[in-house]
Image (cartoon, rainbow, N blue to C red; front, side):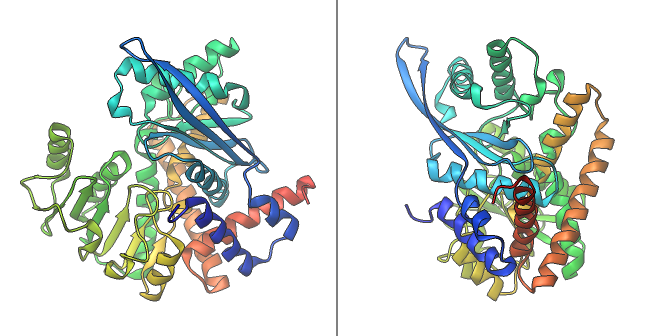
Length: 412
């Protein structure tokens, strides 16, 4: 397939290996997930018919701890994507130095076409299909694209029914009533904001810098709100149906209400609407891809005029596009660092579940900020050490940590 996500992940691994020269036996193991499961999930639809959905769970590496990664419900889910995402999760947990590995799951479905009852039956069916391979100390799923705390609640309940005991730590991203963590709902965006603020200091952007956000879903909308509160101008927003621009600043509250009412940012009256022009074509100081992988390719990278890119989505830039952006002297903060706030607070949630003791929102945010700022500084140091990009700096830090854990376990 074009821009095969797993091929991209392998290409990035080979690229960082040219810098850090890890043991060839460890490198060979890191090229493959340790286990990939494909399941069929029969679901009784509201009309009484049975429809079979295909689901996946990829467990890439557990040298540093249990597999960890979200479950997405999306019509574009495929095995290459899930394998790539599980690989990136291995690097993501390592780059922020939490004791977890990398996993990922997905189901091929458009959840918007299902009733709430059908969605619940699908969520429970997915867990029935994979429950023997997950657990608080084995593999811990979480929300991802088109999954949320309600879906996590159904999954948790199904797992506990099947195993016959309470194990809240098997799933993260849960509601507070079931052991969720304060700040989890917006943790991915909040972590990205902490990283963005460090990057802005490095390149000397002025207060009130303009921002373009491609993708106005959960993470993108939280990011827009948090940045607007800090004085940034949200100049361009886009979703799958259209793009809105206003260099005086788009009112995030108003456009959220518009999207809630219409299903899209398109036709919003607080800015110029352009269904043809892409978000990436507008000139902004900071560009935030917050949609799906492979959004920025060699075909459109030359058009990008930003000074800073924060990868809120997973894998939004292909390796070929990365080279173009580097040549254009655009600083890219890679996904495995930029969007690690979500898995960071997921880890905090697991710790709180294990303790049975819960932190305040302020305590969670304080721990998250320290994690993200420290990780940014460590990645920057690797970037300077190897005279490379932030992506390769992050990969160098993460892959060395995973390789060391594998070596210490004798997996060579």
